[in-house]
Amino acid sequence: VTAPLLEAGVPVALPDSKAGALDQEQKPVQISLDANGAMFIDEQPVNAFDLSARLAQIAGSATEEGGPRIFLRADRGLDYGRVMQVMGEINAAGLKKVALVSTQGSEAN
Image (cartoon, rainbow, N blue to C red; front, side, top):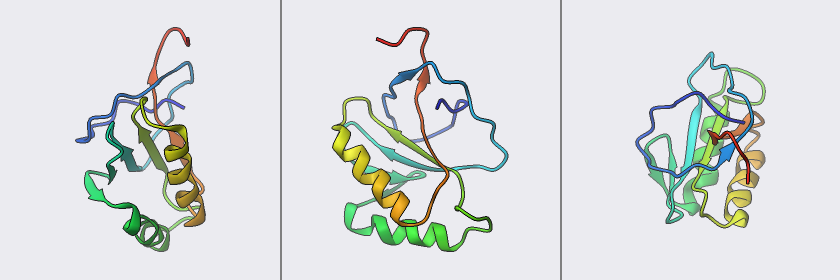
């Protein structure tokens, strides 16, 4: 899924996708993984040991079932397993509205 242009302070080289843009009613929580594998929730750095606690906090403060929308932004050069590990943590926290962010490209290679 592609997201409308987001203002994010964490530089991530997103992969391209042919998917359409998502509508945004509320500001989503952005989880970013940069090219070095550093992780951020919105623009705040978070280490792997604190991730599950931070996600549980986000899920616990949610006003709707499934929690807020989560936009997962991962650098295209990262290992797929690293991205899946973070997705597993998001799911384990009870956050069910997850979108993988990419840039909209004209051709998928």
